[in-house]
Amino acid sequence: MIEIKQVTKRYTSRGQEITALDQISLQVMDDEFLTIIGPSGCGKTTLLKIIDGLVPHDSGEILINGRRVSGPGPDRAMVFQNFALMPWADILTNVAFPLQLRKVPKKEREEKAAEFLAAVGLKGFQRHYPHELSGGMQQRVGLARAMVADPQVLLMDEPFAAVDAQTRQLLQEDLLNLWQRERKTVIFITHSMDEAVFLSDRVVILSPRPGRVGEILEVPLPRPRETDSIRRSTEFVELTNYIWDRLRYFIRRDEAAQGLPR
Ligand SMILES: Nc1ncnc2c1ncn2[C@@H]1O[C@H](COP(=O)(O)OP(=O)(O)OP(=O)(O)O)[C@@H](O)[C@H]1O
Ligand SMILES: [Mg+2]
Image (cartoon, rainbow, N blue to C red):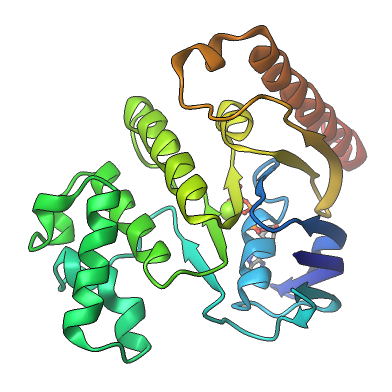
């Protein structure tokens, strides 16, 4: 279980202090798929980086299975929007990299990397370089690389934002397949209401300036969800509409607080 307890984060930039996150509290269950949605600048990336141990926070604490997070660790892996692959290394080497860091022998790590490349549908591309692949394929590589060392927790920051709409739906389905097969806890950030509902057990809506937990919503849709009809169901549409209503409310409330004209 991941316990986020009253986490507050301030940044100082150009002599001004801003509170990016204000007393965020949240629990994520083992094997849960949790999505965070919220307006631009509300602190989503900041929160994910704090959970990953990449960015320090000012107060509060984060516990993973009762152990306090004080830096990055092998129990967590991050998937980035811009893929963040090593351009000079082929796909197999990229995916094997987390195992290389852990000093796993070459043969063993390449076998494992090949297995995960196959699992994301890239069997024939092991010796290709990142620039030879499409955005969607590069993101599949990013996913394989995150999975290869078998972390408990996957942290995903808008991983599918840079790919076209059709590829995005396919990636969502493949991610759910992998998640069900590998049993991971996922914290997933998105701007897409559809994506949040399709993927998640629960959706956390953050309200902006400072980032706070606005609302937490259960998604009671049955699994497996990798069917066409689920996106067209009344329940699905109602849930996405509800999230948009709540988001719009938080954004308008913030605008009013800032005294912005409408
Ligand atoms: N390194 C930094 N230094 C100063 N301020 C920062 C830094 N990183 C983020 N911020 C500020 O913290 C706030 C939250 O930023 P963050 O990137 O976490 O938002 P976000 O919700 O991920 O936004 P987006 O949806 O656009 O990705 C913003 O006001 C941003 O300007
Ligand atoms: Mg962000």
